[in-house]
Each structure stands twice: as structure tokens, then as C-alpha cells.
Amino acid sequence: SQQGEEDPQALSIQEGENATMNCSYKTSINNLQWYRQNSGRGLVHLILIRSNEREKHSGRLRVTLDTSKKSSSLLITASRAADTASYFCATVGPGAQKLVFGQGTRLTINP
Amino acid sequence: SAVISQKPSRDICQRGTSLTIQCQVDSQVTMMFWYRQQPGQSLTLIATANQGSEATYESGFVIDKFPISRPNLTFSTLTVSNMSPEDSSIYLCSALPGVPSEAGYTFGSGTRLTVV
Image (cartoon, rainbow over all chains, first blue to last red; front, top):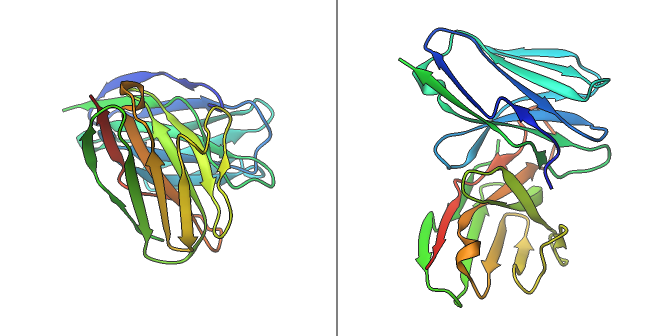
């Protein structure tokens, strides 16, 4: 079963703009992770944020986590055409090992 | 982080037949997982592959349809049995490194299955 919703379901922006994707989840978590998938291929791990963290950065990526609202956001700054992909959030529950995925956002960067 | 080789990358199969998908990890991993991704959808966990014991299946998935093997800490197979067109999906394996890290989970490149 899916953990929650991601919005928007699809996002199309111009190269150089910032892209923000949101994720909501339903249950308590140990950590939340973001993944990228290009054209239905394997997933690539982008960033992990733990339940006791509020914000994390990695290069052009910024992730926030609000456990009181059970939500997270992924910001990609200065987008590039190569960022075109589907982005998924996934959660790991306390004491669990499995990932539970959100619905995903399809991001298109227009040159 | 671990690297997973998954094969086949794609296949077209006749209904009623079975397909076995293999995942080989280049290092020992504690947990392996199998996911299904239906066209245009997100990933749904099929089962957790346990080394030396039966897999743990999620609600809606059964062993007779999706038998899984995990003979050691680096290898697992998923079989899609008695296939129908509704089984057309991408199937992905995933592994959790032995030591939890910031690197997250590693995924195979996926098997794109079409049942005709």
C-alpha cells in the first residue's frame, strides 16, 4: 500500500527555475527518503532525513521534514534538463526495514 | 554502496507461463525486497526476501503467485507464475546495506515485463 500523497503529480518548469515537490505520509516514521527514477528504470537514492531532523541539504537539493504535519518537501534549485525524472518519497517506520513509497511527482525541465 | 545486477532487463512472455527474475548484489546485505511498479504508478512492495527462511509477503501478494528464493546474502530470485496481462509491470529488487547509512537503499535497474 502507498504511504501517502505527493503533489503535484506532475510539474513542468523552465531550466534554471526551482522545483518544489511535496510529500505527505500517514504513520510514524524513523526516516524519510527521496528517490529519483529516470524513464521507468531503477531508483537512485537522493537524500535521507531522520525523524529528529527538520532540514537537510545535499548539493542543489534541500529537504524539509515536518513530523507534526506528517509532510516533507524536496526543493531542487537551479534545475537542469537532466533533472527530468520521476521523484518519489519513501518512509521507513519505527523498527521497520521496508520502504513505503508515495505516489511520485513527474518533473519535466524544459530547456 | 552496494551495486545490484538485475536480469533480465525486459521480457515479453506468453500468458500462462512463468518468468524468474534474478538479482545479484556485489556485497552481503541484510535485507532484500521485491517491488512491482505498474504502468505510470508508484512502487508497491511485494515481499521481503529473508535469507534462509520463507519470504514475508505484503497484503495482496501470495507465495504461489510470486515465489521468492534467497539462498545467501548476495542473491535473490522472484518468479512471476502463471502470468496474465495484468502482471505486465516493472519489477525491481532492492537491498538494504548491512550497516545502515545515509546512502539509503540500493535498487536494481528493473525488469520490464510484458505479458501477451
